[in-house]
Image (cartoon, rainbow over all chains, first blue to last red; front, side, top):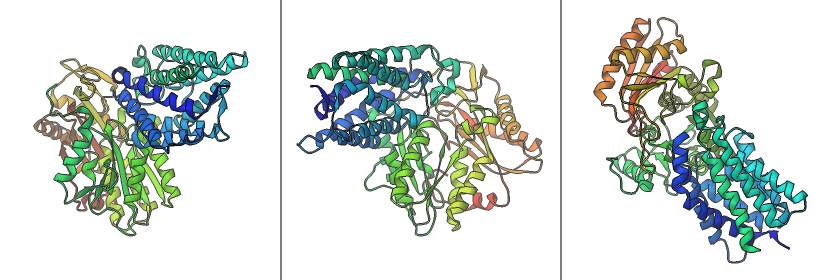
Length: 214
Length: 330
């Protein structure tokens, strides 16, 4: 039975780090259009710090909740801006879900929902505010829906990734109402939200690592 | 891009290294966190500690206001990007002399979150932390939504007055109340004539067409309230003064401190041209210029432009503004 366990999370962080590193410049340019141009740097460096921290953990695999708590701590030590506290809080909410040990892989949507809850709690944003939540929330809903319909772990993860990608693309037509881009008001229309785009890369890594392990 | 850069990713670390080396009589680097700049007087026993922090690229802000009777510990972020919660936390620990710590910072989403997380961590260490959030930038939100306004160069006045108040031996609550009064008594406006470029991005983050100016621009290039034809210095000074004084609505006879800061690439002589006209207009409005600061106090990389800050003074604030300081920024 496939699980959301330490092996899966390690694979996920590694792949998410690779995807963010590949898109470092693109994310910076997207952020340059409606923000301050550092989002690619923050995300790529933040996930690099997570991966460095996880590599340094003791040789025996740490329990999944500890992995996420360490990830949160590494991220907040490396990344300031808004993404630092947002992802750190999301990761800590995820850790709380894994306190009892690994989850069934079909519960990916619940884990994504926990991340989204942490992000929303810290940033006070909601769906349609042109933020990373426009990727995280649809992804968690899609994964929960496909799980309820009896989908396989791979199908569930794929649904999350597709919904995240669609959600990120849809931010292009939205008016930002949170963060620095909010000050652009209607001038933010026509540009995707870089936070939603990086979120879709991260959520894509959940699907990719599932495929890699299955 | 004609800039003095080694590797764009190293610019913040290299800036801080040069800064603490140049001003080692007043500041030092935290022993464990190279994104924390400490005053040589940080952590004095039983004095309220003053902490601030913000993105880099605004030099001499934020680090330049670290020093005696000023800020005790300053958290350094990436260019235009909030410092980490960990750096704010390390600042609070270093600034704490047992009488609590006042974090005086600007109203930006990232700083708000990171300071909040840091304050929570410090609370677990048993340190009492209170905050004042600067929101002096008039054009960033209407007066009815002042809590949404950004903090800009008025922060310098908040640090000066907050730091001086702490030096008098005041309690944390008193320091917070006075720092709050200082920022409540500040109004600022910025005008941009040319954009700036983050070295790692390599191209300007926004455009200002030749012959145009952006009135109400933020000091990361956040768009202003209007783009219009570039006018003469006197007309621009008149506009800026009007925006600040209309929002301020001060009674005649009020004494004020005036701070005119360049945004990085405007020659200092032009700042004096602006200031001369602004001071005339301020006095024509029945106010009295008690003290003036003209220069590059709070910049925005190489943005072309200037900001005006007017601080209304009273009998409490005047001696605090006058108190001697030792910090690289003044």
